[in-house]
Image 1 (tube, rainbow, N blue to C red):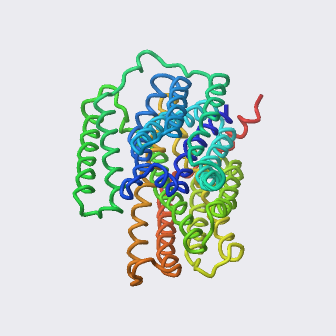
Image 2 (cartoon, rainbow, N blue to C red):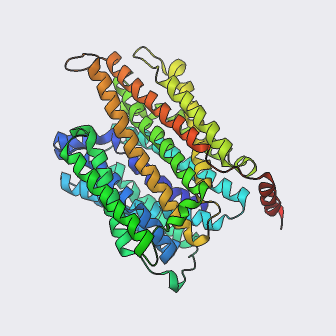
Image 3 (cartoon, rainbow, N blue to C red):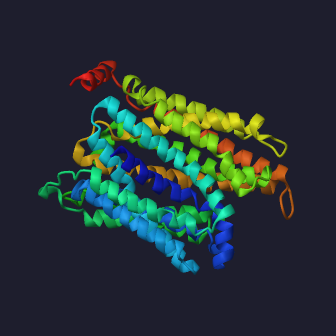
Length: 469
């Protein structure tokens, strides 16, 4: 069951990053307009973020295995269509349906783990593996994208999901039990689902357009204001009118859930922005090929995996707060170190150390955040908490990337380089972005102070329970 859940999350996160390396080849092969190429990523990101809350709630209402299977099937089918696309519109539409499948599948993986592994020690280990896979998949995606782009067709970036999806469908049918879905809980808050989905999609779309059109553009302000209005209506519906609210607002009175989601926002804003700028740093400043760039990500992937898995036994004893603070401080230090990389840097002397530091710190953070955001909730809210956490992460990645891209561009333009910027100018701009990512990580460490301290006696009871027959 753990393998099935980790494989589902691996597919989900992998596909958010594997396409990046191949975008230039895709643009040439399908004759994308330069200004529309961003739609290949934005179609996926916008739909994922918009539907995650609904996807999480569906697992609570209609059964975790049923929803898991639906998400995997839709994701696999959309991947196949995208891999066979012969025009831009088909590929963008396929990416949007991939996002919908991922939005249903991702919360289901956490729901299954949260309702299956209930003892603290076992739960921490399960979340450790899930978090390690989740974080490392983003880095592995760059490596896989480089290998496929270098030696095969870009289409295999999407078509590779077909055999993986078929295997995952079989595994889910075989090992994942169906959760009991009581009839009285099979009521979906349709007005709430519509308003929050459209509101999140509009807001994320506005944020994703900001680095192209600027924050003052109508194409940015319009979706942002519209999204804010829809989200305000959603909150009103949940507070006053919904008989069975999609998101019971009382969940935010749980301090661990609220604080963990805030930490997740800042942590993922730092981590996933780093994936983007680290790729540019390797390719445009150090002049690595796509394959070399992918190999350069291996230490980061290894660090995330070791951090997420290695810290699993610590979280039940210490509680998530010290792990979160320590991991985010390590990550911030690693990012500040990495931001000093210039055109004359070597990988071993200047890149390897900060990358390992960042990876281990973020692996620990991903584990502890997942634990804090889902622990202590009733089983019928497991999907809701999972969807909420994944939504926060998607928002963090979108806001973080756009904000740091604007800082980077301003820094590069400020060097006065005309035409094509020099490697030194690019290194300065990307260093500024990485410094901003370090500040995001530091803000996450401050937010982690609000995570409740877990009493040692409770942890001890959990360990005793784990040892009991």
